[in-house]
Amino acid sequence: MLRIAHLTHAFEHPFPRTGKKRAGLVLAGLALAVFLGACSGALPSNSWPGLSASATTAYMADGQYVFAIDVQNGTLRWRYPDKAVAGTTFYSNPALTSDGRLALTSSDKSVHLVDATSGTVVWRMPLGRDPFVAPALALGESLYAPAGNGALYALNAADGATRWTFSATHAIWSAPVPLGELLYVASLDHNLYAVRAADGQLVWSRDLGAALAGGPAVANDLVLIGTFDGRVVALDAAHGREVWTTQAKGWVWGAPVVVGESAIFGDLSGGLQAVELSSGRTLWQVRLDSPVRATPFAEAGLIYIGTEAGTAYALDAADGTIRWQQSVGGKLYGDPLLAGGKLLFTVLESESPLVALDPQNGAKLWGFIPPK
Amino acid sequence: MWNTFILDPMINALLFLYQLLGHNFALAIIMFTVLIRLLTFPLTYQQQKSTQKQQKLMQSKEWQEVQKKYAKDREKLASEQMRMYKEAGANPLGGCLPTLVQLPILIGLYQAIMRTLGASPLQLIDLTRHIYEFFPNATSLIPIDNHFLWMNLAQPERLFLPFLPTFGIPVLAILVLITTWFSQKLITPPTADPQSSQMTRMMNLYMPVLLGYFALTFSSGLSVYFVVSNLLAIAQYALMGKVDVRRALGLKPAVKAVK
Image 1 (cartoon, each protein chain N blue to C red):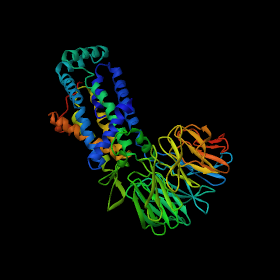
Image 2: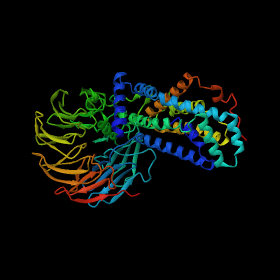
Image 3: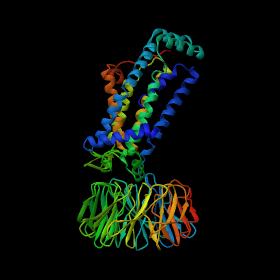
Image 4: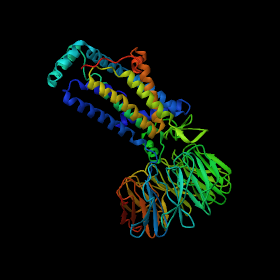
C-alpha cells in the first residue's frame, strides 16, 4: 500500500494528459477498495443475535438495537435505543430480572438496564475498557456481568453500583451459572472458576488446558463444560475435581443440556451426542449437516438445535432419532428457545434474524424483519 | 484458493511464531513482517530500480523539452514519452507490476492478523477452519494473548496516563501517521511535471491520513504491522543508499517544475 505513489507515477506518463488524472484516480480508488476490503474483518463485536424470552415476549439483541417482539405473531413492541448510537452494539442474550427488567451487555463497555415492558432505560453503567461479549446473569437483587477483559462484575440491580469484581486472566464470553452459593465462570484463559456469589471470593479453579468460550451446565453436583480441544469435562461442583471426560470430534462451544440422566451437546464438527451423566459414557451420537455452535434446548423429551447451514432439528432425547428438520436459512449459531408454544431461533446473515417454528413439526410460523 | 495458498499458511505461520516467541503476538507480527519483507525484497528492489530509471529520465533535459514542446498536443506528448521510455530501457509498468504482486501478500497478512487474534465469537469460529490439523498443540495456543505493553492488540490502541485518565492518547495512530508520511516522502521520487507533482503531494498527504485513520479505528495489531512495515521500508531504502532525508524534510529544493 505504501507504493501507491509509485504505482500512479509509473502509469501516468503513457496516457495522454486527459486520461492521466482519471487513470491515477482509478488506480488510487482500486487500491483503496482493496485495502478497505482487506480491513473489513477488523470490526469489533462481531457475533450472532442474542435471545431471551418471557411467555409472551421475545427479546432479541441484534447489532445496534434490542427488539421486544410478540411471540404469538412476531410484531415489534419496542426497540432500544430509539436511535442507533455509533459504537454501541448488542449481541449477547438479554437477561430478564425477576422484577421485569432486562440487563443488556454491550460493545460500548457498559451494562444497560431497561424496562422490559416499555424499553425505557433505567440506568447505564460503564465498566472497564473492553466490549462485553457475554450476557449478564440476573440473580435476586444482583447482576453478574462478565467482561471482555476477564473481569466479572457483581452489580446492584437497583442502581448498577459495583459490589465486587473478580478477575480471570482472559476474556469471559459466557454468563456465569449459579449453584447454591457459588457461581461457575468459564473463561477463555482455559480455567473454570468457582466464585462465591456473596463476595466474589475464589473457591476453586481448574485449568482445563483449552479455551472455554461457552458456559457450563450444572446438575447432580457436577459442573459440565465443553472445551476448545473437543472435550466435555465433568467436575465435582464442590471442589473442582475431575469426575469424567468425554471426547467429541470438534470444539464444544455450547453448554451441554441435561435431560434426566444424560447430558447432550453439539460440536463444531457437526456432531451431537448424549452421554451418561454419572460416567460420561456415550449413549448415542448423530451427525448433523454442519457445525453446531449452540446450546441445545430440551423440552418434553425432545432436543431442539440449529446448525451453521441453517437447519433446525428436533431429535428424540432418548436415542437421537431425528423427528423433523427444517431449513431456516442463514446460520443458526444462537441458542434456541421455546416461548409461548413457539420455537424461536435467531438467524445470522438473514433478512429475518428471528424466526418462530412450530415445535411439533418445524413449520415456519413467522419471521421478524427489523424496521429500517 | 485464497485460503489454501495465502491465508491458511499465514495464519499458521503467525501461530507458529507466536508459539516460538514466548506467546507474544506483537513480536510474532513484527517477525512475520520482517520475513515477508525479506521474501518480497527482490520485487521491491526491482520496483525501486524501475522507479529510479524513470526518475532519471524525467530529470533529463530532453524529457523537459518534450514536455514544453508538446504541452498542447497530448497525443504527441504521450507517443514521445513512450519512445523515450523505450530508448532509456525503462518500463513504465516496471514499478507497478511488482506492487500488484505484493498486494495479495499484504492483504493476506492483514486478514491473517485479524483472524488469528480471534477477538470476537465469529472470528474465533472462523479461526478454527484455518488451523492445520497437524499443527501441534494448536488448541492450547487459543486464545492468543492480545496484550502487549499497554495495548490490547485486538482493540484500537489508546494510552491512558495517570494524570489524564479520561483521555486516551492514540500513540500508535500518531506513529503510523508519522512513519507513513516520512517513508512516503523518502521513497517518492521528485518529479518535474507539475501535474505529477500535485498527484504525489496529494498521495503524500492522503496515505498517512488514511492509514492513521485505520490505526485509530481498527485493531492495534494492524497498527503494529503498519509501523514496522514503514520502518522496514525506510531501513531498506537507507541500506540501498537511496534515502535523501534533506529533501524529505524540505531542506533541499525539489526538482524544478516545467512551466
